[in-house]
Length: 192
Image (cartoon, rainbow, N blue to C red):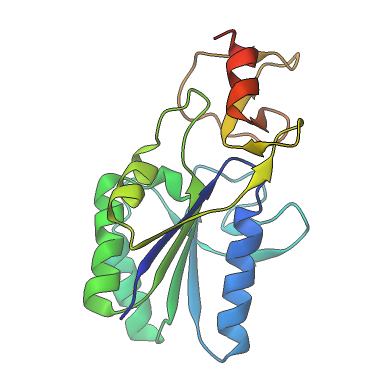
């Protein structure tokens, strides 16, 4: 029986690298995975999943109105798909997470989702909220704070490297805008 997995972490824990490794493992065994990534994040090129260590793969894009069940059903008719891999899954909508549960339950295709759990304010992203609720398996990928403790929070910084505590939930950026830290250093940075 297929299952849905949610691999979550703060930034810079290797989520995209792990996704690309999973894709490689399926391909190495003669199986065909399909990769999706959020259209909103095109920092590394449109339709690409890229890791900081230099690995990359082509991906289908999803937007908030993409019907993932319909898209995966169509792709599966064209060529049997053995696994669905979703990068930047925090940007999924509630409906899209539900559609992915249908891929697992009705098409019997495993779905592996990789993304952030919370935003820079410590609030759940919509996609993450429903993946935490509905996934069969939850897997935390770990990264470390500058102090050596596990980093489970993300700070958004301004152009001077100072932590900020207001703004839109989504503001695409990388190491230039975000820093993964432990809870203690998150509180200190925001003066809490």
